[in-house]
Length: 594
Image (spheres, rainbow, N blue to C red):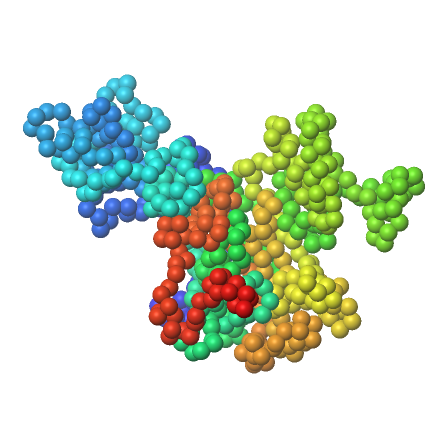
């Protein structure tokens, strides 16, 4: 098939996915995930020495000769053991007769978590000994031969999900922690969702999967970037915090629809909810508006959503930035529960209460409240005192009521009220953000609320030249259960406007972005995009307490790899080609002393 006809057939086949029905859940989350894989009949044992996986054998396999490979999960009284692989568990009968003494010796003496290969016959369990909790609970393996592939030393912790382990120990021995069913489930679900996203974007909607460089140059504004030394004195690469410039340049290059599972880097120091390296589902489109991007993402999530969760309902509700702050006290509200902020200024307009009079007399002064349903029933006196103290500690923050709303929700849930259903996924678009914010260090100067390539709202372009602080942007965020999981914008495609915002309003050195400005002058199409935070999304879908639970080899909250002890020191002779010398803290103290 020639490329043009293939392309035309692809585009003729474009269609919005039909909402799928929820699949019944009959076992653990892990088994549900594997079941969804089985419906597509993957060949789990192709190219391997085994004939079957531990988790797939059923009564339909009775009498079959099989070869299995896995880890010894459990052994009882040297009469049987449970063998485990990624697919599940199966019971193996240890032979007791003298003719099988060598097999018995291997299976009885191998430590738990040793790797073995066994061959034998699938037989029924004795009547009354079936285990309905195991998918393989009706059968067992009568072993004929066994081989110890690798013995296991004494473990630092047991490979069981219900065993509590410190996070530091889990990260130090990550390769052992990955054997747990929960980690297996998390990573396999992540893989399946990404595969479905690729299918939706590339196969159904004509996106092109393109890798962009990891070594780049420093970008003005935004998060702090990691630096990589070069062999040219005083010159450094930067690890990109996102492929932002590249994906815009791809639109200038006529690629039309770009997609990438992108690795991104931000040097943000010690933050418990962040990783120095993370993954984005990065998307850019030409000839699109905000509504088009939003519809694309809604369809993408609906199509890739796991079968063991309630289906995603579209379209997602939308609120403006101003409405979100007024109603929820934050720009990433958790809409699974009410307790909205209410303006009650009119009630107290003629009040004689001094501090309320004082508040209402100020410009834009308001009196706002949160109604806590059944608060008198659930909250105790010490809870009220806790709320009062929380309010006092955060008094001068504009986001006080938003934080107070969440604090009240926490207290109510500790008292038994169900407010935030963990099985509910509440998506929300937040739009019409301000284009600029005052800089914290110098409020008279402006910085981009999103990034400097975000286009202003069409109705507010005139404000850029008169009152830029009042200009809204074409920036949109996607929020899920109070967490920002995506953000994007329609971009500036006019070089003159981009140069004016960078140089005049943001006072940035335009030479650093001369390549982008030049590209915009050569017929750049209107374009926009978005990036979904894959780690955060999977964390919420799986109900994991931390994004580190959905990343194979994460860093600690201090940015350290506890398994390999990275970052590590480098000998001074290896730094010489990069013209770098380490200045230790003690050296600087000595210099100050002189």
